[in-house]
Length: 430
Image (cartoon, rainbow, N blue to C red):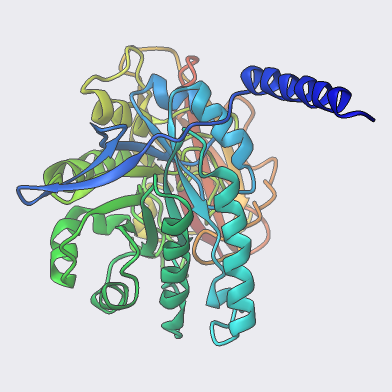
């Protein structure tokens, strides 16, 4: 081919590439920084202050923005293309999690080759997503301090953070702790200078978190990356070691009080939070941590979240459950039943708008697939025939004929996508 024809071909190819580039322009990152001024830290996105009102979980992103939220947290990049696309569509940001192997799952941080391979894998993930405008910051690992012994994990975290700063000048780095303790904070201060923000998962401890952070010696910025109801490891237990779950109305009260006394009161150091869980999961029970039921209905907790994010409650609010007893006893009393015998149930549920309520009862064996750190658990199979059809708030349970531990659940629906939930663990014995 002669050079004129070659030049013409190259020009046509360049024109085609330019046309394609204009049709699909490259993603442009929005720079995010942490600013310290007058003893106060704040996050800046595109040069503007950005206080995180976030949701841990990526289900129903349109509801996050509708209720006054602005960000999503993930725990890995497995669904990152969809999450980032939905975030951009809904004008949300993403704390993009980078899944770092945990010692409690068998990873050995003395294995230099495995650690190096992990670093390269994560580098590929950062390169893939760093220029997406929805990215807010990087979450390096989740609860790496849970059941660990080898502090070399923090060296690996710092290597990841340093690598991110080398290839991505636009986003801060963070690592997420289960709770906050002085030992881990000392490790992070000494071994992780490339980590910009400390992130903390906490539940009942949220009420005193600002003081806890100060007591560890951390003086920098932090995020609360999981917060919610009282954890199953923190609250009361029955004599047979079944954790007692708060009702949806009890949860609403503690979500509100803990947020207002910690996250709102510590804006000098706290950059915001991600409420847990924006979705539904089985963890001890199907209702413990999810802000939604399995079919997407919302409890009174969501009314509180909207109030905390916007200063206003929704027009139609969820039902309120004030009493739930089995055989005249609350869940904390330790309920013992005899096989095959009938026992009275009482649930006092009221709807703020006086919407008519429909009741759904479910009887489950107590879960035995119990994990740690939010690892996946299987849902128990419901038992049929223990309650009469069409049961309302006052009805009768026929105890299972097989001795063992069980849990009775109530769902009171208002017909507008809202629900009140609660459960009572009980033990059947001869």
